[in-house]
Structures are given as structure tokens and as C-alpha cells.
Length: 114
Image (cartoon, rainbow, N blue to C red):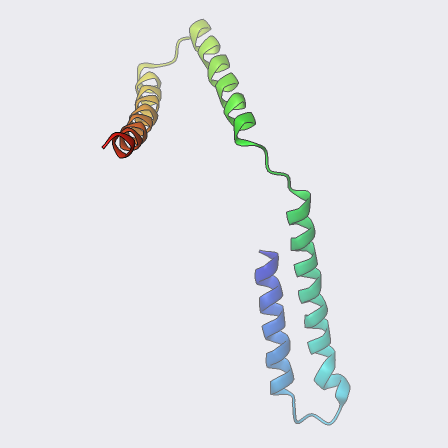
């Protein structure tokens, strides 16, 4: 988003400079362009700083957290059984993931052994 704002600001500065090129005053000519360039630099700097501050979590940690959440959901569902509609939708999600995993394993197995 910040990069988009920076690009639009830079484009606005260029358009303003071209549009008012015949102006006699240099303030009218360059002030909006400089303002747009500063805004562009600020947006790009903010995007770079934000990207550096974000840390990506390892996939193994995310999978462990997912397993813990599924286990806690099963515990809660054992105490308070969910509706039949919810049970079916959860089953369909789990089955779809298992089928995708088996398909990937099958493709890998066939590529290795054929």
C-alpha cells in the first residue's frame, strides 16, 4: 500500500511539474514536485522499515501451533458436542487435506519408483 501511495505521489509530482512548466515562478514549478518526492521517499522508507521489522515464523512452529489448536478444539468439542452440520463441515475439511496429502505422496512415489 505504501509503495502504491509513493508511486501515485511521484506521478502526481511529475504531472504537476509538466503541467506548470511554463510558470514564471520557480516555487510554483518545484514546490509540489518536491513535496510529492518527499512523500514518496517517506512511503518507501516506511515500507522498507515495516518489511525489516516483520519476522517470519518457521513453518514447523506454525504447524505445531495448528496441532495444539486442533487438539484443544477436540477437547472442547468432547465437553460440548458441536452440531451435526459443524461436524460434517469439519470432517470435509479434514478429509480434503488428507486426500491432498495422499495425492502428493502418490505423485512423489510414482516419480521415484517408475
